[in-house]
Image (cartoon, rainbow, N blue to C red; front, side):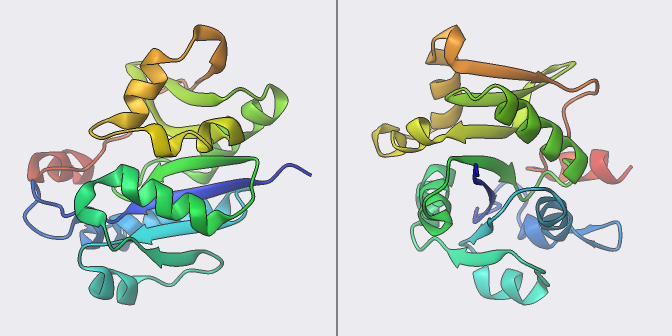
Length: 193
């Protein structure tokens, strides 16, 4: 049986937001609680959520049903370090789906569509293709996961995607615009408008 884990990255400093964005209110919960609920409602197993900055406060706000919460002590080094922590916590898996804790409109149905496409046609990488460009969720196959130690920030995953031979990347269409990645107060305002 093929094992596909989910890693929810939620360790960032929220410097552009000025407050822990993982705790921002959204639809009766928080940005992170919505992202986590989507991962837990999907076919991903296991689900790992990686915390770093403000970890104590953020973890206290969570009510995971099956996710494992881990901490990245090197969160100040960026989300690549968090991904490595999440992948290590996931253990021996065939692929990892990378999700962002500040992108709450990536729902379980979309995650499952991307995973199903990858399972039907495994590639080293799968990326969601929205009407307005590529975005999360991303699927990283086992061979790509083995190369994470070679990558260097910033934007290592996107550079990996851009430099991959075309045959290595499965592009999974989603008939919608990219979900908002909440980094700034203006992004949050757009999301909650």
